[in-house]
Amino acid sequence: MRKVSTGALVGKPREGWALIFMKAAFATLLAQATFVPQPLLAADQPQTGKNSINTNESSDRASTMDSATKSNAFREVLKQMGAGQKPEPKLWSTFVAAQNDGLKTGPKIGEKVPDFTLADQDGKQRSLHELMGSKGLLLIFSRSADWCPFCRSQLVELQESAEALRRNGINPASITYDSQEVLRRFSDTYHVSYPMLSDKGSVVIRKFGILNTNVPPDVTRFYGMPFPGQYLIEPDGTVKDKLFLPDFEERPTASEVLLKDFGVGGSSSAIKAQDVKAKVIISDTQSYGGHRLGVMVAFEVAPGWHIYGSPLPPEYRVTRVKFSTDLVQSQTLKFPASTPLKLEALGQTLPVYHGSFKAVGHILLKQPLPPGDYKLSGTIEFQECNDNECKIPQSVPFALPLKIDPLVPAAPKA
Image (tube, rainbow, N blue to C red):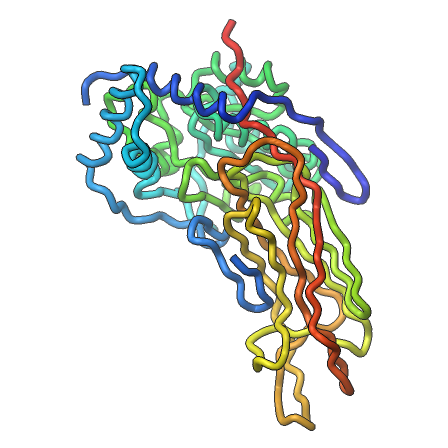
């Protein structure tokens, strides 16, 4: 993975198995469970796909499924897998929905997180205070580093962002309900340098209020896992930001935090069209299907010229950034406030942008995506005007390299 900030590169390439093999491996692990019967991005108009949550909007969701339906979905899927059968799509969809139902996201932005002390992968006791960097802590709650391929990929992404986080005063750490032995094996396999904390019994998970109670308690292999998400915590223990996505197959990334909070990006594409320059930046050059990447677009408008925000009369072109939907499931971009410009001759006041400004947001990659090298493409639309003329509206293409890796395999058992 490449992290680019003033030309610096950190991290290393990932390795993995084929995505389809990972799906099969995940199904096998489910079958072995211990069971006792039981978009468009436009100026001033940020749009969010139905399956994404902005970092300032992560909140609990009401349950929409009854307990019997969820319990039956778990039991029937595990029963069929145990018999070597492939669950039918409708049943599998219900099984996934049962795990996502009633999302709980824990402490709100501005609240203090519960204090805790847990053992890491090496058996060392780590308190919340000791985990903090000079500017805070990025704390990931994940389902399991053992049987969950989406979690394993998220934990590896955190490792590959760890050095850049530390350089910016943020220490990384993760919490799962896995045993110390499981975490040590994963840490050794993937050379994890951050604390992987073992919350055996899910005591801290419960204190944060994010225990996934959709899992029947007698499915002991999976009961105790949290709803997966991440907190950016201030040194005094206050939640500065957090992100929980409503589908466990989709994950936030540490790279988005680096781009949003520290301007550390992974890949960029620059365009120039007459009096407008723009640079599109994504937070990583390598990723996984279902991961959310940060996006930043830096604009420079030449002196004497402006481009438009919204709303606008139909004869003008709103500034927009569009990503192709080949790789992207949903997208959101927040533009800064525009400046009202009064056009005396026309009797109109229109929202405009002058000079340099940035729009910041994210894209959610589709899941699954076949591993490989891709071009993340899109267009920037705008119209240049000054006090005397308006040029023809333009739609300028851009493309950024993006490598999609297979989901991370389980660490080999001794």
